[in-house]
Every structure is written in structure tokens, then in C-alpha cells.
Amino acid sequence: MTTMQERPTTDPRRLLGAEMRETLASNMLDKFPQLTPEKADRGVGQMLAFLAACAYADRPLSPSPLVDDFWHAFLLHTQAYREFCETKFGRFLDHQPGFLDRAEHGGGKALRARTVDAITLAGYEIDLEFWPELDLADCSQCHANCSDSPNHP
Image (tube, rainbow, N blue to C red):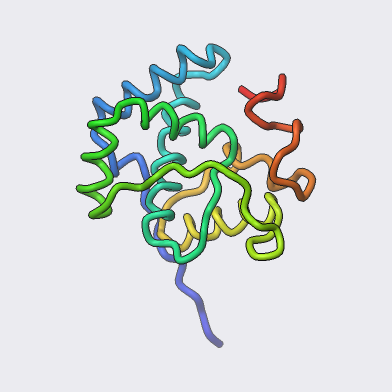
């Protein structure tokens, strides 16, 4: 009988110092007052896990709308973001919004599922609360939980 040993996951929040994590969580709490401090801290972690997966992925990945909001918060701290990328990944990770060819990359749901798989393969914890559209329609732009939806925290 073959037994698979589960690989331990790493908390992605360890990628960034406590001071910047707290700053980003605070920025998100200011923007989305309905977030709790605990959820804001977890969101920073999911954004960091996403960035780590992107740094090594051979295909495009896509953040959930909420993870993208956390990424935007980090991008506004340009110098810290640049230093983080260069230190952790050896290069700057560009934010390139836009639509990807559905035939080549799959729809939004497939792309996000690939993203979650890439984060897991990179060894980071997944918090599915930040990837809710995996249970929604197979689209890349909808109002079920997008950033301009009234349901979006």
C-alpha cells in the first residue's frame, strides 16, 4: 500500500514583515470597514500567496476580486512593493489587468482554480473565503462577487 505524505503548508504572511502587513491590513480596513482586522490580516496573506505563485507560474494566474484589492493596496506602497518583489522573487511582478483569451486560458472560474492550485503547489495555505467565485458561474467578469458588486466586501 502506498501512502502519500502531505506536504506542510507555509503561512504566506511570513513573506512580509509585520509592520507592512499591519499597514496593508489597516489600509484595507479603511477602504472596507465591514472587514474585521482578522480577515484583513488573512487577506494580506492570500495576496502574498498569490504573488508567490505568480512569480514562478509558467501560465497567467488571476486573483479573486478581493485578493486583487489587497494587491492594489500593496501597489500603492510602490517602494515597499518593489523591494518586496526584488528581494523575494528577484524581479518586479507587474499588475497587468485585462481579459485573457478564453480559448487559451479558460474562463474566469478555470483560471482562478488554476491560481488556487498554483498557490497550493507553491506550498502556501489557501483560505477559500478569499476565492468565493470558485463556486460561481464560469465567467471572468460578473457581479456575483466582483469588486463593483454590492456583495463585495
